[in-house]
Image 1 (cartoon, one colour):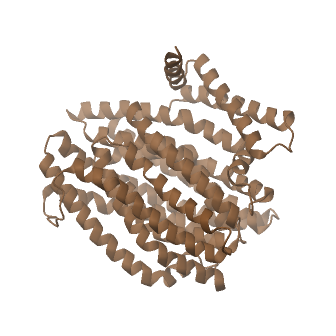
Image 2 (cartoon, rainbow, N blue to C red):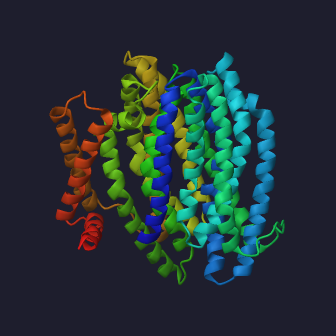
Length: 520
């Protein structure tokens, strides 16, 4: 598991670093402007297709069936299944992209009712440009499903680097030549080009590994029926989660200028540990869990062992991420975004929005692994039920914390943005609780032990606290924020791993032992 998770994590790390550079360059040219709000809002609308039919859905419905056929050495049948799923996905995505381009003006009114005038018109133009690019990203997820099932993780997760590079190159080449509104249109075309390149770089390897993959619509095959049967509830589940994200975006559009952009900037940082540690472990575990064989008791014991180990592996990195975002968040946000149009006030505000996200960070990442375990059991309905619960509570709490609480406390309307992220975090914990309870009834007791948490939380708090104290009282405020962040995070990282090694925390011990062996 560790080697596969490491490859996934490395690929995601490189793509996320490229993503952070992209966001820094974007922030330099757009800051928290109307054009920035328009682009961020527009990007979410066609991404609905990508998230609905892309990686998460294919991982839950396609990979368990395809990986099991490979485990049974039914390679020819597996190739037929991949062919049919790819063909159906292509037709469905093409149709939805076409409809989406023409329906964009109506989608804007649903998603960003607070936008008006030139800001609304710009958002519509960007969405219509981005829709075709989203189709390439969905097909890229089909390639990922094939590659992951063959345990080829690195290429599929590093491919988004090309997508990010295309956007960065567009910003750098035209950023100083165009105004913000024109630049937003140009960057949209750069994004489409990057989407095509992300798909193109994976396709040859997917076709080579899948062998004998040709266009086919033979959806009556039993394994294909199983994929389609699982596909529907997962699509609905992902759709429900996306509805929650869109509700947040819609509520943010009703707040002052900068709310939509601030949500997007904070989400970029929030998703970094989710992707690196939650997604990497979950993505590596799903094919392995799906290939489990034996009696029901043996399968359940196998799943419990892998799940509990995975939870500790995730928590070892997510807990310090939570603490780091809270105690060092201003330095992190400043180091990544503070340049050009993005000033110090923007940094502090995005820090508050990011701190709100940390409320549910641990729940969201651990919940991914629980969902993957359900998917490996071919149960896609249970995660759907709890996703619906999450959306209901996120919506109700979002309206409460986003509008009524700030007003009751006499705060400015902009402080409703951190309220939205806090609400999403609380709803994430509810979903996680229900997922764990339901899985425990199926396979026996699972979860992150209190003994383990009692070790890791104090380690993170003490280590981050030392980094924060040194930087805030030992370094000049005139020193560039990137340098101050580097010092704080270096102290944090060294102390966290050193103290973890001394206290014999398994993950710290194993990692430092590898480093020490290589240094000898």
